Image (cartoon, rainbow, N blue to C red; front, side):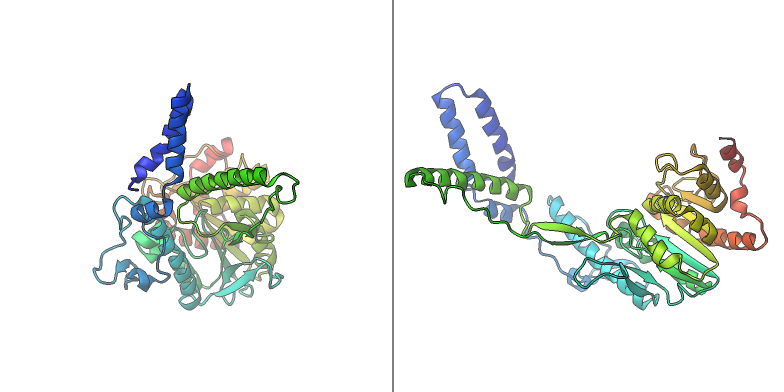
Length: 416
């Protein structure tokens, strides 16, 4: 039978219309005929015609891509940037291909963190058994022993993992703008210890065990003919359910379930766990945070849960287009005051870099990141963040406040 995917999509509507309009034997026969037609479609064959198998390479070389000397992803043969629409009119397949490449990129960045940046991969929870789910963070050799400075990096939400700011930038722009590697290398050059959080690695996925339910009719005293009729109805019902499930997710091979990682089941939990077990135990006199997007919210939650400890150990916090909200997160007055003195949020804006940007919230000063693209705010504010940290460290030494916190709009925040 030859049938297009668009026709398949319309079939349930035809059936519904037929059921609504049925008023006699003829209409019922039409409905039955449509249902019979639907049940006899070879869905597997149909999907093969409309969408290729979701079978993608597991290496960059397999995709025929590589990073050049500028850190740009380019096709090995043509030298062209990554092409999303590899197959026309197959958006879902193209998206799955993009996601498969993204997973390879994640592993590639992990390798760079270890080999290029000389960071160590540390499992969490620290007391995890061999059989329980685990996550990990990355740390420099001197992260816990450096007596002077420690930098902590927290990315935003979504598919990004440790060492990344934005997967889209890594694939479409370059490694410098999309990863935390420039921050890590400069920090280490300037004598910082480094800890890279991994707040989105909250669970592992395993195949859901199949539950075999025994038919109630097996142990029944019903006549054999009646049991056969019931079994036939049950099989038809399962067939229809499987049909619609296969259409909704045509190439799913396994049913997966999520096993959450103990004490690291959310970005907020992860930030608190790393603070308690690593950052709070570090020797550094000055701890600095760089937190992007949802990472800013995670930091504010950490501050709420560990206010006294954070105040005593953290010197300055650079937020980049943070999505925190001191009202919704119920941050107290003392936290808001501390943030006004020790934090700065580089937000997406068309204004030049470091230009003051007004805010209705009475928290930290906001300045332009020099770009109106959310995902680029960390990279564009890179030089200003290090300058801010240097000023904060010097101000702490001389009992003065960093210049950025003395901007004119700070007065307006205090008036609020």
